[in-house]
Amino acid sequence: MSEALDVTEHEFLTVGSGDQARAIATILRNARRGAKGAALVWLSGYRSDMSGTKALELDALAERLGLGCIRFDYSGHGVSGGEFTDGTISRWLEEALAVVALAKPKRIVIVGSSMGGWIALRLTQELRKRKKAPVVQGLVLIAPAADFTIDLIEPNLTEVERASLSERGYFEEHSEYSPEPNIFTKALIEDGRANQVLTGIIETGCPVHILQGMLDPDVPFSHALKLVEHLPADDVVLTLIRDGDHRLSRPQDIERILAAAEALAVA
Image (cartoon, rainbow, N blue to C red):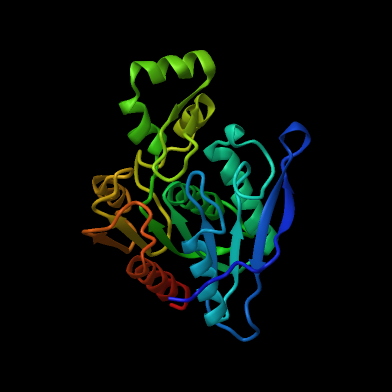
């Protein structure tokens, strides 16, 4: 594994108009001339950004292979503009589509972590509808939190949290990864229902490699098994990591992630 450092300057792309306009920070690595393989697209998780360890290691892999790499921060995350509490799956999906359109790759492998796995599935669905969109050559989903607002949050809400959603429009919960609490808004939860993917067959049209820790306290491995059931038409590999947590950021975890991404990108 490399000693990856994020030394590339980011540029900003304006997504949306009027009151909905926000400046999205992007870092686009161009493919090396003559290099063969798909560009890598990184999709972060909830409250994560493109400067995390896995994102940097993916970019370093792209550099070694001469491939393009697309990274960005969702609005309200990292160095992008916009308010975090305005965020929804639809809003962040719109930004992902805009950044991919800006980069104009011909083929891509999407690597999505946690919530980024959900957005990766939605991004694939939307790109398949467009005539001039890049071909999605593969998906690498790391502890994919598909439909997490519907399946993992709503059924477990306490009466206090339900009251907070109703009265304040959001509720807070303790975060294991930050001193600041997680904030889940009513808008996020309602919009999640409009972006459900675990309701029927998900047609990605490409190979899918899912990596899931069995000690994940946030997304149980049974959720990954459920996702597999909704991908009957695809070539799916599910790697269950017995001692893996939610982040899967240990050196051995990252080696697995990079191996999966490389295998799909240069196939």
